[in-house]
Image (tube, rainbow over all chains, first blue to last red; front, side):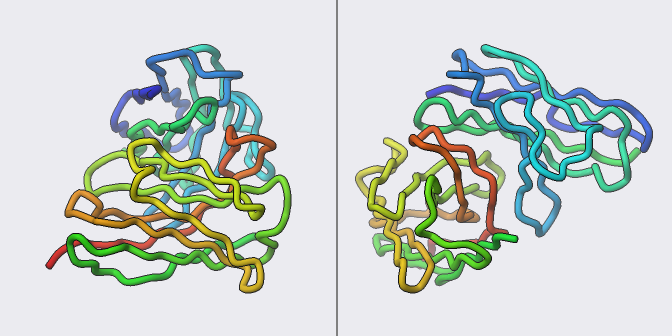
Length: 108
Length: 122
């Protein structure tokens, strides 16, 4: 299976800062079918990015995704207070569809 | 706005069958190209994809769980379900129901439920 490794595991930043999260796959992700999700405590995960770089409906443009093959990134250009959450990636190109272990973004 | 709500026993005994239902509101399970599925997160571990089902009955399961998993769709009640047999403590997890969109099994999860904790213990 395609193992996804996210880094860093956790990050402490201040509102207004820029952050880049990494998701690295052990094998090339077919058709760059890589998604990013945000999850806050007690809430359902929310889709942010699909196809490595396509923002989902209603997602602010401060969120952007990039990458191809085995290396992908999620960038938040300017952190807002509501952005502090857990972010995880998922590849949906080849079964079994696997997830990264997540990056926890905390307020400094 | 589509909403998914998981329900089922929070405690299951070892060797028994775990059964969960996901009620869908704000949309139809008969829609296409929609797939309905399940993902779980064991305590302290990462997410694991369990499988997906189309309302026509097509299913794709994680090979690691395939021998124990059964999914079904009830169009009359607008819900779908998961059964996992012969459970052990390793099956203790938060179980999420999901909706995915795509023409093949390589479908994108665009909605999740909030999840329900199922503990396997005697």
